[in-house]
Length: 169
Ligand SMILES: [Fe+2]
Image (tube, rainbow, N blue to C red; front, side):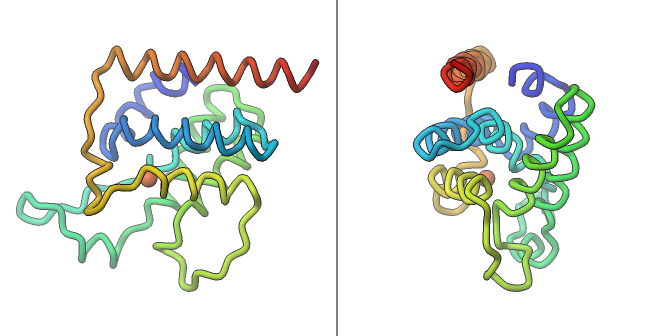
């Protein structure tokens, strides 16, 4: 996770949608996956990267929600960007695809209907995102300092390793 988090591409896009939010969603996804017996590594990575497709919809210096609602495809872009990054960092392609699909389906906002049936992993990432949402999109603006962000990722990495050890034991 630390390699992914510190990669300049992840940093660039995660800063846009909020590093504190990305980390919080990774933590929620980890806990939900653990409870449900789903792969915690895949869930945490999808949580961390779920919003990396955000584009900033500004008009005259202010965020424009109307433009955003009309034109947003952040789930599609995020799925693509995350996939590219994961493969570049040597992720197993089957897992990279799983993570990418969970990002694609983490929101209904771009879908023509809201009746898709999600896999447990996809549901976890959606639920994890909703847990961290604040009214008016404020969750995208919450700040976290660099050292603290890094420490949170290292701690989560440790928890994931522990779970994977337990699974293989
Ligand atoms: Fe989000």
